[in-house]
Length: 408
Image 1: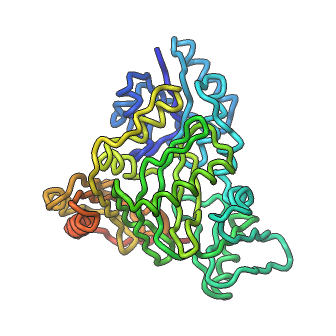
Image 2: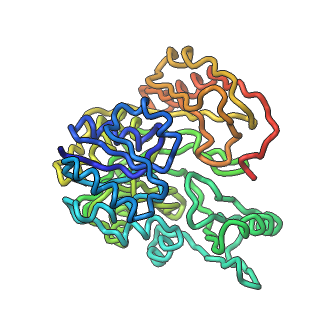
Image 3: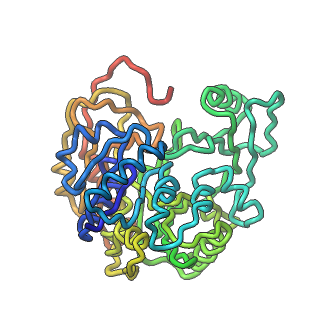
């Protein structure tokens, strides 16, 4: 039986969509996971034919043992793949004996490390001025002017990313980071609107699948609280973006694979915020499908299997997704208004993530977004208006508790 192994998954979002897509493609799906909570919810994962718990997915001996067991059951392994931060390169490494297309492990590793990304693009016009700080050094000096961005080299989902405006903020952040890491990355702050660009690379040619404008809320952290996608963009805007994406992909020597670029369209042109060697998570896969008819997760799997790709837009619909957060930490008692939101004008999808009794936190990372409302409109502005208005109908009833804040 033709089999694909997924290395880790979330309960919702692109990684879950990918497993469903693989099942729809007629593949036998196996999930290797470190998350015991997924095993407890095994009955909810109908699209996973076999779920296997492995204490440490980086333990190659343990992983290879499970792969051997699956093969002994008659599985013909076609690929090992991951859609989760920190596991993409690992999955590609495990998949080498079964790969149908050549993937560049070094390129994936470079993209997973934010310091390496900046160094590779050191002379590229889309790169930001940057500085690496060793927290073990005696004299820590920052040469970039305020404001600037300070982040952990391994940050994901906006966690451990700070906008620094003063020396006092810098010193407070450095003290907090000393408990977590030895190195920090400081980056120039770029102006302009921020976009998420979904890209598939086949035979060293990047194809832009979607350009998605982000709505960013900055309180304690930078949190993306909205996404807008329009299948049609100004020719000059898109041409400059395409040229930039092609040149960045060439610097990394990307041969085949998927990636999403976060970029700002600044007064000095396109600037790279970060690049990740996988499709974006959350609602992005569904947004792209609703807008263009292209299933990113499915086409990423087809690319990994060396199968033909379907990359042409089947429709052109303006979509906006408004994410839901809570204003305070607490325990979820109930959610109201989701049905009313679903019946609101333009709304095509409503998703509520947590169940009653879950601990919720005011947003300090992307993981503290607890659902979304997705809407379509004749224009992007109309789609955003419909989604935001419908989202106001939803209320998370949270009871405060005495516990550690997510920010600590």
